[in-house]
Image (cartoon, rainbow, N blue to C red; front, top):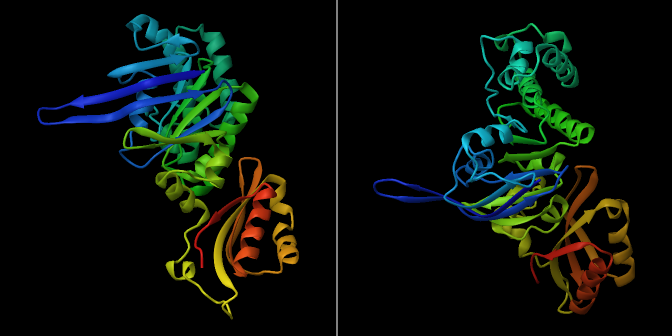
Length: 343
C-alpha cells in the first residue's frame, strides 16, 4: 500500500541546514495497521505530511497504492488525496457545522450526489456510534466524540489508506482505548490500511501489527510489534518498551551476590514470554532440571494486540556451569533471554 525509499526532507534557513528526514525507507502492506513511534522532533509528523504531500520531500520516492505521488501535478494529487483519509490530533472540525454536515463536507468537495452523500454520512456516523448526535455541534461534544466525528469524516470518500497523526494524544486513557478499539474494528471490517504516528508505545502495543522507530529523522528499528517488545535492538526502542512494561532494573540489583560459597555465582536475567509460552511453567521446570535457585525480582503479563506477552526478571544462583545450562535451556524453549549481569 505504501512504499517509501530513501526519503529525505531538508529545511534550509539563512543560518542552518535542518535534516528532518534522513534516507527513510519502509513499506506498509495492504490491510495492516502500521505504527511509527518517536519522540518530539524525531521526524514522524514530517514523514506523514510527506505521504499525503502536505510537505514536498527533498529527495526519494513515495508510492501509495502503486501510484508514485511526488511527481504528481495538483489535479492528479487531489484525486489521490481523496483516497487517503486523515485523522488529526486536535480533530479539526468545522465549528459552524453540526456533526452530520462535518461528515458531509469532504463529499461536497468531491461533488458526490447529495442523496448518496447523505446515506454515506448516516452509515459512517452509525459505524462510529454517533447516530444520536447528528445535529450536535462540536462545542457540544466530548473529546472522544469529536474524534469519532473526525474518523467518520476521514472515511467519507471511501479511502484505501487512513493516516492518523497523534489521533489519541489529546484524549484520556479510557477514551484512547475506545478510539483504538474503533480503529481496529474499522481496519477489520473495511480492510483499510492504517498508518499511525504516536509517541506512546501503549498505542503501538494495543493495535499495531508492525512498527518503525524513528529517531533524529532516521528509522533505527522496524519489525513486528511482538519482536520489538521481546527483543528491542536500539536504545530508542528499549526506552519506549521500558516505558510500557517497566523493565528497568535498579542498579543495585544488577550487582547482587547472594551466593553462600565460592562454588556459586549470581546471574540476573530477563525472560520474555510470547503467546502460549506465557502460560507454561517453564521456570519451574528449569529449577527442577538444573537445581539452581531463582528469585523473582520483577514481572508482568499483558497483551500485545491479541497475543499474551510477559516479561520476568530473575536472579539465578548456582554453579557457573549450571547457570549457563539453565539459560541455554530457556532459550531452547523458544524464549528470549537477556543476561543483565554475570556475577
